[in-house]
Image 1: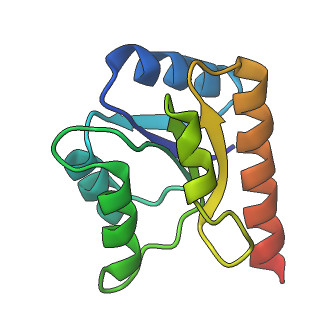
Image 2: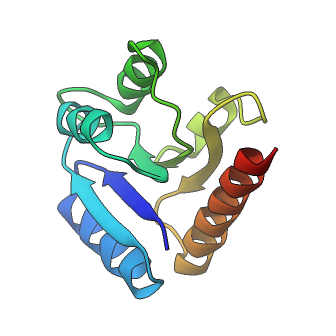
Length: 129
């Protein structure tokens, strides 16, 4: 189905998301911090990024800025996953941004699949337009 990268500093979160997404037919890679995530994102062809915000080394905000500000910019749909629900209001989730949605931690597996499927469907629709 889709090639997805999960960028999160928590190993358990990465493992749970990897297994869940693989069980739903996706190919999943992981990165344990923003620096590793950005390197993989720039060198790979991903359909979706699941991104934690609060990480040591390079946080999710910085990773997004470097994706968008790179030469060339990296345009991949992003789903923010964070334990800080107040962060949800900070992100501009609209058709003009790569950020598709927000999932709070702890997360519900059905919500993850629903939002992943929604972001992938939107990407497919946008590529046809």
